[in-house]
Image 1 (cartoon, rainbow, N blue to C red):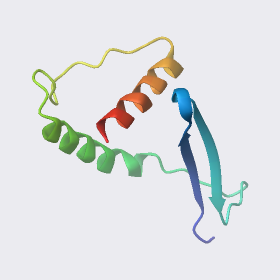
Image 2 (spheres, rainbow, N blue to C red; image 1 turned 135 degrees about the vertical axis):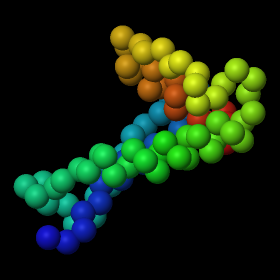
Image 3 (cartoon, helix red, strand yellow; image 1 turned 45 degrees about the vertical axis):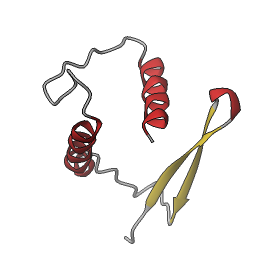
Image 4 (cartoon, rainbow, N blue to C red; image 1 turned 90 degrees about the vertical axis):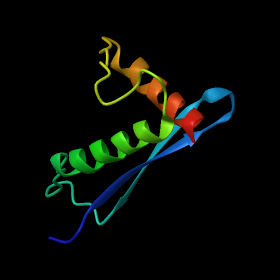
Length: 86
């Protein structure tokens, strides 16, 4: 089995609209394995680094994250926030 890659491109349109476009390389849906756990540590490290760079009073690694019942609204808010921070 060779390497398989699935990538979702996020296109930001006018008026805040977002469109997702999926791309793949050498995809075999019968053998695709998504090792999500391999992503957790690097993402956690990058998130901590970003928190340190932002230097927002009261926002650090111990700040409580409130969960939303409407996960899609939360996801959209994170996308919007990330675009403001770039």
